[in-house]
Every structure is written in C-alpha cells, then in structure tokens.
Image 1 (spheres, rainbow, N blue to C red):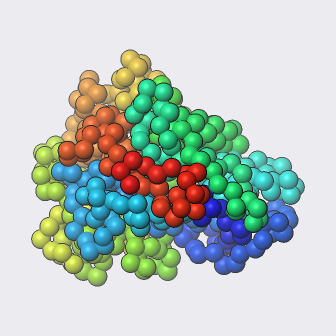
Image 2 (image 1 turned 90 degrees about the vertical axis):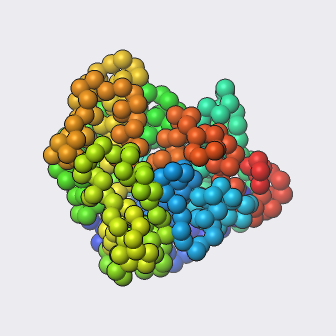
Length: 459
C-alpha cells in the first residue's frame, strides 16, 4: 500500500467551523513534515478539522459514498444516463481494475485514516485534558467509519463465508510519517478482523466524545454509525440498542416535512451532514450530488434517472414522498423522473438521520422479539405518519413492512446496496455475494506492493 502511505502530513488549516455537522470541503493549504508539524493543542485540533474536510471531499461523503453504492444496486430503481464511463461501469457491473471512482474512494479514505492516525500519535502534545479526550474520540470515529466504508465496498460482504475469513481491506492504525513508513507494504486483513477494529474504534470513541458540542461530532454520531455497523453484521440486538441511545438522547426529532432535512441546513432530524455553501461545494467542480441527480434549469446534468415504476409501485398510493422526493426534469434531460433530495449545489448532504434510527430500532426489536425503547409499530409510525407522508403504518408490522420502508425512506442516500447485501437479496441478476458487486483494489496499489496486496476476484 505504498500509494496510500504519505510521506508528508496533510495539515489542513480551516477556520469558521460552526457546527458538528458542518464539514467543509477545503483543499489542503500546505504540507508539513509530520515530525515537526504537530507541537501544540491547536496543531492537533487543526489536523482533526482536516480529517473532517477529507471526509467531505467529493471522493467520499461529498459524492461517491452516497452515489456509488446506489449505482451498484441500481437495477429496477434507477439508471446512469451520463457520459462519464466510471460510474456507468459501476452501474452496469462492468468495472475493471482501473475504475476511477474506486481508485479515488480508496485513496481518499486512506488519506483520512492516515490523518486520524497521525492525530492519535500526536495526542501527547495536547495539554488540555478535555480537548485531548475529544480529539482522540474524533480521530477514532474517523478511522472507524472510513474502514467501514472501505470494507463494505472493496470486500465480499459480511456473511459471504461462515467465518468471515474472506479478504477485507488493510487495517491501518499507525501513521505514515516518513519515507521509511511510506515504503512499507501491508496485506489485506480478513473481513472479520476489519469489523472487529471498526467496532473497537467506534466503541471507544463513544466513551470519549461529548454528548453535546456544536463544533464537533458527538457520542451520538458515533452511536449512529455503530448501529449501522452492527446492522450490517446482522447483530440486531447491538444495532437496536445503539439506535435506541440515539433516539432517547433527546437531541434529535423528525421534521414534519420530508423535504425539510434536505432543503434546510442542520435540522434536528440530521445526526450528521456535510456542509456546503455557494462558494464551497462539489458541484462547482462538476461533481456533487445535485450535479448528478438534478435536472433543473441551470442545476444538474440529470445523469441519474429514476425508474418511474419504482416511484409508482414502491411507495403507497398518494404517499407525499412520491411527489416531494421525485419530479419530472426540466433541465439537462427533461421529461424523465429525478430525485428531489439533491437539487442544490450548496445544500448540506445528510449522511445519517433520525428516520434511519427509528427503522433500525424497529427492525432490531422485531427480529429479537423485544420492545426496547418502543414497539416496532410505534417506531414505524414515527417515520410513516399521516402528517409526514400522508400514509399510515400498520399497527403490527412484519419484517418486510419495516425493511421495505427502509428501502423507500433511505432511497438515493447511499444505503441500498448495503441493505441488499445484508438481507442477501439480489440486484437484477446479481446475487448479494457476487464479486461483480465488489469494487476492485486500485491496480497501482497491487503493483506498488509487488503482490503483497491481493486483487479481488474477476479483476
């Protein structure tokens, strides 16, 4: 993994961060040798802000970690109609070992991990005890969720083998600080080992992060992601309990309108979102969610076309989400259906929101035969209520009721292929554990390690 190992530390100096949900997509202003860069509290603090910036990059949550998973699971839901070949190959399951988006996701995620590891290694210079605890929690959070996104995309899914010994991704817990570090090559860990590290990082982060801090992620942000991790492992009790803690914290509430969380910044429904504005957004660089999803005058390329049958048949008749989350394009590609969740270059990008936590708790309780926090019926009714959706939830929902609601509630937010894999459902003619649904390890990484890093099957 010589390409992901950086000789120089990207120390990103950012000012004006005003919320734990506001992740600025700012390019590095300078590169400083890691042996001399971090000397005091402010240096490490600036480095952590830089890690947030990397996660908000278009190669991660700024676009690709939301868009590419849905293209992988696009069959009978949406189709790619754009001219860029890399996402087209992802949607058609025709990726090769040099797929551009796979390459960029891999590289940028490991950049963020290296920044987190560098911050952890520099905690000794932080004199403020409370700040030191917070910074360690943030670094562990970044490292944990980046490994999570990588293993979900670049490895066969959890459960593909009985003991999850299939190759995962490389676990990186040490920083690359100099040329010697950069010259090392690392083999892939197993999927089981990667998930063990993810759970350890997020679990520890939860104990270190504050419950409330307007400028940083909190304990509940980490709990929301831990809930996702457990759900991906089919650990329904763990997913239920983590989601329950988020819900019962009292910090979050569902909006009355289904559009509010996408049309407004930092609403109470959003647990974590990427902040963008008119000057700082992925769309100005011909990237971004609105660029690819929107087809409005002056906004969007209309590259992701939504299947009309999905909108008509997946949602209940007269469900408000049919008309508020989907529309007929009038811009680049008119007279087709597009997703209204992503219609502005400058909008914030919700990564995890409260509706998901209700659906996770409901599913966990139903599988386990419990009522932790509330009944599955009441939790489903919170998401599917007449004011919010103009539809009514069944009082005694089945697992299919809850899982189908998850598919339509979280549609085009980057969760579809991951849910298909954990539920062992196909997408089109591809089974849940098909190698065609796994991204290739960048070939330059394979070449640089002279075979230490093993390529995925089929590439």
